[in-house]
Amino acid sequence: MKPETTIDVGADFSDMPFGRDKKDGDDNGYRFRKEFLLKALDEYQHVIIDLRGVLSCPSSFTDEAFAGLVIYEDFTKEDVLKRISFITDYESIKKNITKYIMEAKPAEKQ
Image (cartoon, rainbow, N blue to C red):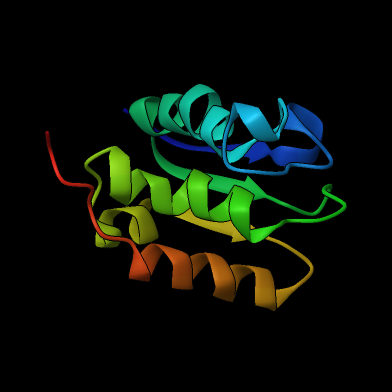
């Protein structure tokens, strides 16, 4: 596993990420988690998420993308917090994402 990579959300994904899933548009948290975040976590030990190039970072997107790792992808909260870090101009964004991860509960297996 390679040591580290950076995902520049604004440049690599969208400068206006929004929503949870496809019904909210193409730039949603589900797509980001599945197409960008999981691939990076599979290949790299640590993933830096650069949010400086986004115009907003709504809770629906961040909750689905990052807490979704705990809820749907079998990651522990501790592993997510250890393996992902954030670059943003606003400390409140980091605090909110951390809060969503800490409040996440794995979905019941069917």
